Amino acid sequence: MNRICYLVFFFILFSTPLLAQTEEGNRLESIPDSVPSIIDSLYREDQFYVGLTFNLIGNKPESISQSGFSGGIHVGFTRDFPINKRRNIAIAAGLGWSLNSYSHNLFIGEDESGETIFRNLTRDIDYSTNRFTAQLIEAPLEFRWRTSTPETYKFWRIYTGLKLGYIYHFKSNFIQPENQVVQTDVPELDRFRMGATFTFGYNTFNFHIYYSLNSLFPDARLNEETIDISVFRVGLMFYIL
Image (cartoon, rainbow, N blue to C red; front, top):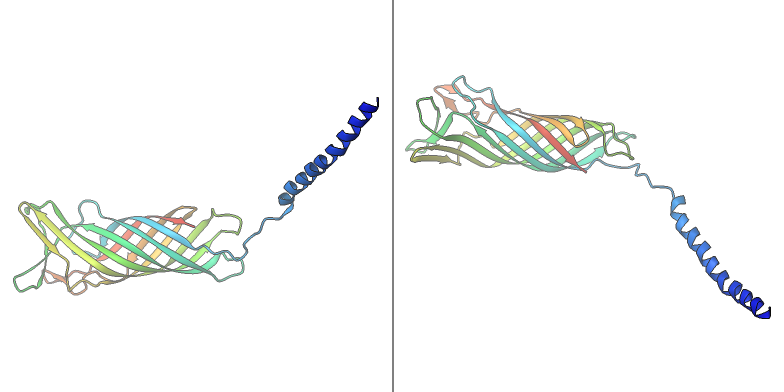
């Protein structure tokens, strides 16, 4: 009987610290559940963007037309500056890069004196490729409205503004059997670009429009007619927080 009492005594003596540790561990594990989540009331919608567009040429002479696929890719980053207490209205500025290609029948070459030649390619001229590409550094400036809150990253948005750009690389490429004409230096090209932008959508997928406000070749002429062509881009814009 005494042995049984001693065993019970030692069992209680050594099991008490273990129970205390278990209860303490349970209390420590339950502490994070009681800590309230922190809400960022001063959030910004700083975003990386990636855009894919179909490019159109507007205000072109009647003899000029597009053929084949003309597209563009656009990437960059914008810094968000909310201007109201709810932070759903903001101004944003950023920096980006853009690559655009245009397929058409406007030939760009040069004569023996180095003067630029602009000519429309008629159907009786055999050629496989006639396009120009432009690479730009761009600076978007946007006025933003959205339905965002500090707790959600999925919301409706309407962004509109201006996009300033500079064409740092231009290439006109004409290819026909046993002949190729490449022009990279075209004095008539206005390398400084300015366009109006409009973007609207929900969450990641957004419809995007860009319309240039100045002509690509303001001083160029085609058969005594001014080549006052502008650029219109339409496509999708993806925003990544």
